[in-house]
Amino acid sequence: MIVAGVDVGARATKVVLLGGGQILSRAFQFTGFDQKASALQALEQASRTAGVSISSVEGVVATGAGRNAFPLASKPITEVSADARGTFHLFPNARTIVDVGAEEARAIKCGQTGAVLDFAMNEKCAAGVGAFVEAMARALDLSVEEMGSLSLQSQKTIPLNSQCVVFAESEVVTLVHGKAEKQDIARAVQDAVASRISCLVRTIGLEEQVVFIGGLARNAGLTDSLGRTLGVEVQVPENPEYVGALGAALMALEETWRNSK
Amino acid sequence: MKPDKQKQYWKWPEYRRTVPDANLAGSSVLTAGVDVGSVSSKAVIMADAKPFAYSLMRTSAGSEESAEKALVWALEGTGMKLEDIKYTVATGYGRVNVSFANRTVTEIGCHARGANWIWGPLVRTIIDMGGQDCKAICCDQDGIVTSFVMNDKCAAGTGRGIEVFADLLQIPIEEIGALSLSVESEPDSLNSSCVVFQKSEAIGRLQRGWTKENVLAALCSATARRVTELVKRVGVEEALVVTGGIAKNVGVVTRVERQLGIKSLPAGPNYDPQLAGAIGAALFANDRISKGRTS
Image (cartoon, each protein chain N blue to C red):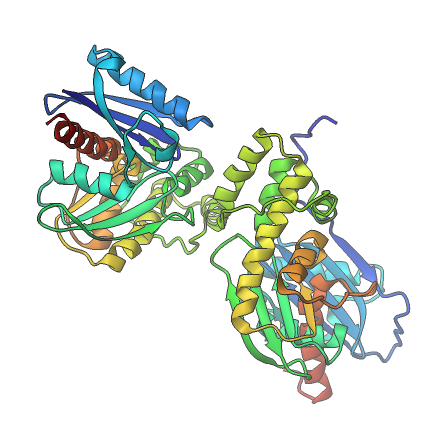
């Protein structure tokens, strides 16, 4: 039985294809203005990689900001449910899930069975999401990846006082002109994001084990800052941006199996 | 028209002026108020408690340097020098760094005092929309602050938020207000409350064929919404006035008035509402002189 999970995010669309309960393939596609087309392209790409035809996919569940734009999916599920499902599959001991994407951040509290107990999210403000990190990397003339690894070389804490992306951009420029080391500024940026995220975590209450997922979890510098800010060890799965899609695929598997009986 | 990549559309015009009917006698006592904001620096020189010269310019790297530049420029061509000023009060975001000032007063106090002077004792609510923050101030008939709320954390609802759009749409910032009012019918406001997300939303609308005027109307309306949400927290009491740089954006001010259901008092031709803080500071400086305290 082949099923797919499609996560139509604000910036990127991710697909995970499952067959026989195993991951067959993953696909990544920038979300264009036509979310439906992006989702279809990503699904086709995943099928091609797995060497299966798209018609053999028996069930599709969509999640993400654009989940309702994908009519092929049998039902849309929220990012919170998808995240919890995907994370619990990879880390059965996860109690706190932090998911940071391009335009949203959320902290989710899970019980022993993986059920969602509580969550907090930020979808209103770009501070503490990927858009913030991108803007700061641009101000430093670095790629997001470069800024992440550079920040790990710094031991120095400089406070970044602004929360707002627009104000923080000027602050970073001032720091650059003030001859602060680029690596220290890079660390200040990661610390600022981590501090916003930890506010979300504190809203629901911190409980170990903490698992960090979403596109920003690719950034080792941010993971380090988040660990320091929360004062606990933070786990990151191998493909953190696909966890929501994995959760959706697992839901699709369950649903298709139930319907086939 | 070809867009000009080099032009910086957010750059509003700087200017200085000598008050036309100012009466400057040899015995006049000069006091000064200098308002060093995050984006603009304003200086007002008073001769015997009446404005005599002023300037408005962009804040450069250092607060002290900006304060001095603004004062020197205000005095330019008047025959007076910095040394002739008997007492200087600094206000605004950078006030504590202005070491040559005799005293500092918060911009909240100065805007209330300045508004009371410009518009008279009926003023009860002042909305100060500055470059990087926005405040709603309540005051009594003497221009003394009774309460206030402010947003200095978020660029939405501030001049910086508008600057981002001036550059995005390549429209000089001082034209935005009037253009936003040239739409035939009021479009839906931008939904996002974050400048970064508003920008993506605006780009999306432009790609769907919206005119720049419609996008500006949606922006001004979203900016006004942020401000009115803030104002409602202190409670609006008439008469209402608007100060700060955005006071000159008729698109935002009109929409604030619509959303609150209250008209604001017009500024009149003589005083730029962006100078309210510096006028208040100069009045505080004058108080000190008239009370005989010079340090």
